[in-house]
Image (cartoon, rainbow, N blue to C red; front, side, top):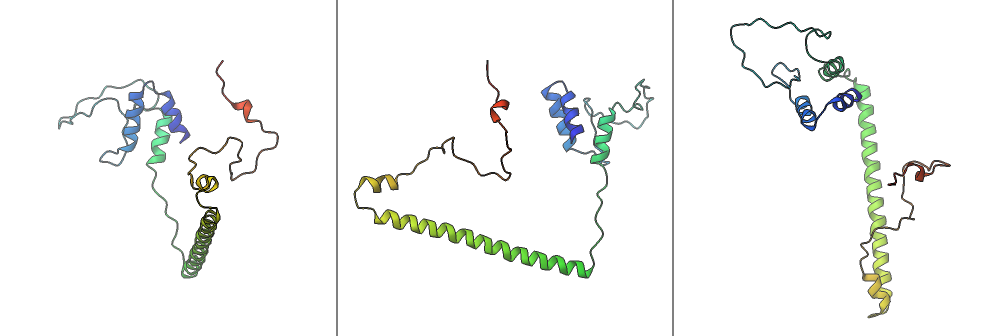
Length: 171
């Protein structure tokens, strides 16, 4: 992937990036990808003598990075060996327990949401009729949350990290 990004960064224009990405997506009849800026030519039955190139990459006209990338893309898929009966039974038990656990988690989350909605509706119903409080409670707030509100994250904050150091400012 890094080599593909490096190869894409070396290209000079958007059209060459498009051609390169299009050639990555398509494959020829032999199952190998081709990279050429030249249009496809008809092959004739009479073989013509090819011009010898003076390049150091073996005459293929491709860079070493591209050859490595194509070798990675064309590598055969390696399948793991089949599991025995005991391993398959263990995997089935794990799958069954995982499914049951996810089912229970899903039901708990839905139950919590339903309880909170019921409590919210009950609290709104307890407000006096035709009051400003009830009108404000029934009003939908579609504004974004305030900037000072903490957003949940998967990782704890880094101590001493100041995000303002990495902000791009126009001068």
